[in-house]
Amino acid sequence: MRIPPSITQKIAKISLTLACASAVAALVFVIGFVLVGGLKHVTWAFLTEPILDMGRAGGILPAIVGTILMVFVAIGIAAPLGIASAIYLAEYTQEGKVTQTIRFGINCLAGVPSIIFGLFGFILFVVMLGFGWSIISGGLSLAAMVLPTIIRTAEEAMRAVPRNYRDVAASLGATRWQVVTRAVLPYALPGVLTGVILGIGRSIEETAVVIFTAGSAVQMPRSLFDSARTMSVHFYILAREGISNDNAYATAAVLICTILVINITAYTMMHRLMRGRRAA
Amino acid sequence: MRMDSITCTDLNLFYGDFHALKSVSVSIAPKRITSIIGPSGCGKSTLLRVFNRMNDLIPGVRITGDVSVLGRPLLDEDILKLRRTVGMVFQRPNPFPLNIFENIAYGMRIHGIGNRSQVEETVEKCLTGVGLWEDLKDKLKTGALSLSGEQQQRLCIARALATKPEILLMDEPCSALDPIATAHIEELMQDLRSEYTIVIVTHNMQQAARVSEDCGFMLLGELIEFGKTTQLFTAPRDERTEDYISGRYG
Ligand SMILES: Nc1ncnc2c1ncn2[C@@H]1O[C@H](COP(=O)(O)OP(=O)(O)O)[C@@H](O)[C@H]1O
Ligand SMILES: [Mg+2]
Image 1 (spheres, rainbow over the protein chains, first blue to last red):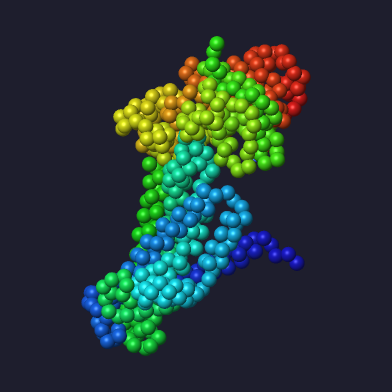
Image 2: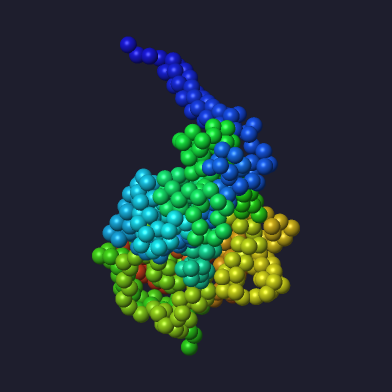
């Protein structure tokens, strides 16, 4: 017996709609749950006061500062290094055994659990290089963690730029570097930035790496060589050790809002950029 | 004695092991239109890309023989300067997704030539040269991709002219255009002829007959015959040329 195509079409449409709807529902539920539970405890004082009594009282300012500094260090290192590597792979070498091996390595690294980067960072930065538990150790370890993603996304974005842009630029007398900066990067930029934004997001979310390499000091960091905690770590400790449910939720709400704001600004910026290019 | 724009003697080109150009010798005269015809895959684009060294971008390419451009051995000339002297127009119109002005200014920006007013002047001159100025002078800031196919190809020609080349290489510049646009581009080529040496590759024999004064016929990497276009089409010296122009191969 054969099911008539009009029926299979209906079934397909209904199941696809349901699948998509449940995915969205799960997301909305999780985010809503945290925001409803947390936002009511978020006050101006909560955002601007020091952490008191291990987080039972006071605010989360040191964790906010810790998060910002660590992400800055991580992305400040990973973005230039990653984009440079991607340019090298996509534009400066010929495809061959070497690039394939490098790319395979990068793909493997992208799939390595973050705790491994935590351990690596602990051994290299904290112990061997003597940076101790510090923002700099944490930032460097996070940089190592997000580097593969940034390289991979940037390289893919550059490879997606039409060949003929490169040919035209070269035929007009552009050097290879000018081809990169004037015929490839401008058009790969949205993709490249996507990788960087993913990297920022992952650095903000990460707990394992940060605990291993930056420790979890509650004091306000005074230099990059001080230990500090990020909001994720703060949340993790509050929730795991049952210190304060309300403050844990409030921290999570701030965390989610931060990520939302970063994503929304980044994507609007990118959208503007692309529309600007097309129309201008 | 007149100096030829491009001469090659016993030019061979290999893509890896593949022998793509076989002992090609030719002299291309200045300020004229020279066409290269032949069936698809015979090496026309490859030959054209020798003249501005675009093949250098392809890994595994090897070239033997002598090529001179404007009296200087190809390899002696600084490659970036060479590409400024020898402009190229590609098969498909390929403006950058920038505005009209920036597309034409692209080459000047690369070479850092001209101050603001000189760039503006060149843009106007080049757009006028390709017959777009009247239509586009109020729309210089609009995106080049919003233009029609013909306008885009004219823009690409203007872009190539903006670095003040002496030679213009055109690789099947009309193959993506409709017959009316093709006729317009051919007229434009006639207008440009007095100032530039033009080498056009085409698989369209009628086009070669219409626009060019000199014509070469290629087959399987060899330049079979080269001479006056009228002579090549009316009294070909080689049997294979005759077979081709009478439509015996595609
Ligand atoms: N990058 C390349 N690598 C290897 N072979 C190529 C490459 N480009 C062209 N060829 C080969 O060289 C021959 C001539 O190509 P081409 O010059 O593009 O021919 P035409 O322009 O006359 O159609 C063809 O057989 C083609 O397959
Ligand atoms: Mg071709």
